[in-house]
Amino acid sequence: MSFSPLIRQLIDALRILPGVGQKTAQRMALQLLERDRSGGLRLAQALTAAMEGVGHCQRCRTLSEEALCPQCADPRRDDSLLCVVEGPLDVFAVEQTGYRGRFFVLKGHLSPLDGLGPEAIGIPELMERIEAGSFSEVILATNPTVEGEATAHYIAQLLAPRSIAVTRIAHGVPLGGELELVDGGTLAHALAGRRPIGL
Amino acid sequence: MSFSPLIRQLIDALRILPGVGQKTAQRMALQLLERDRSGGLRLAQALTAAMEGVGHCQRCRTLSEEALCPQCADPRRDDSLLCVVEGPLDVFAVEQTGYRGRFFVLKGHLSPLDGLGPEAIGIPELMERIEAGSFSEVILATNPTVEGEATAHYIAQLLAPRSIAVTRIAHGVPLGGELELVDGGTLAHALAGRRPIGL
Ligand SMILES: [Zn+2]
Ligand SMILES: [Zn+2]
Image (tube, rainbow over all chains, first blue to last red; front, side, top):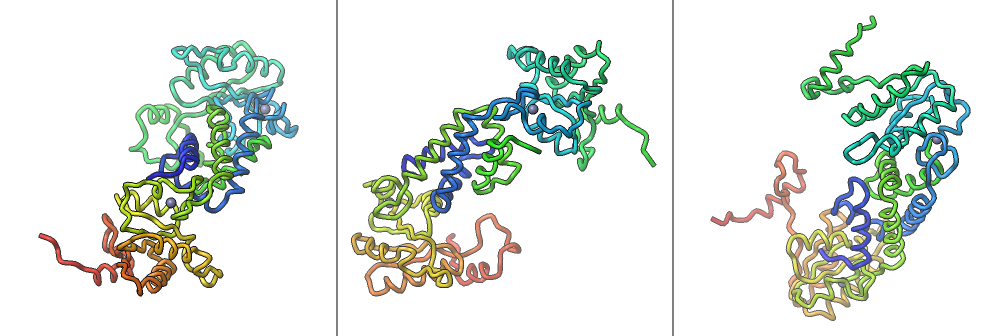
């Protein structure tokens, strides 16, 4: 089970990737060394370029090395809708639903116990963005967790005095799930949010 | 679904890793950018060092940047046993069984249709290694595939004139498997290789 030092260091380094354990890291390291060294070097270059070069979009705060990310730079998107999420991966998730409005990316959620208040997660910048825009609706798509709910609630209160519709993504049973496997809180939300069946 | 160019390039580069598809690569890229940039830079350095620095052990031909790999350099291993495998990952697999003899690592298996004859896969070097050693047994642990069998058979023939025991790893039903799921060839091998139950 002994590898030479450079191989061992590569295996250790690969384990920082999410979902990669010892065994997967070994297979990755040896496969790159045996079959694709130029691919391994390209990956090293792409990592360095991204880790050193990527900052945040000036407008929506998502990850981007350019002043405006592709979503903000696109003139064809709907300027009346703003979707607020907790992180860049959520932008991607919402994009996949077909949403084509604008985004604002918080730095996570409010977490008073960790000392993360409104300033720490970028709520002043969110308010500036809303001020500068012409949104008719702000969709709060923070996570359906206690902290995500509290964050959505906090933002909704800040926006209450304005003539902007503030909405929250619906809670309910996930599509394709089995009712008996859904937790009680979710099922309660699904019941409370019941709607007439369109026939 | 648009990422800025550096992020897109990183996602593409991550996909060269075995088992990493588009979605996993996205999660890896964004997670490194959001949570562990110094880890990402360390991974880049480890990749570069390994891709440029790792060669082959002079004695067993496994991957190593040192003249002798840890297995060959270890004076406490059994010098009477030599295990022949198709690649460095197989060394690792055999090590995990508790085997503590020596290894020789071929460059894959004989594959005449691809123009891979004995020289291409390192069989002359294997013969030199056996000549230089004092092995009483050579264990052929090439893969249980048509090509692996043919390679083992070829090596066994070369070694036949010598007073060295030449063995092949046993074929049979894998532990924990269900008989009805085992393919016919494997089951035939398992029947032919039946042994008295030790009571
Ligand atoms: Zn943006
Ligand atoms: Zn070696």
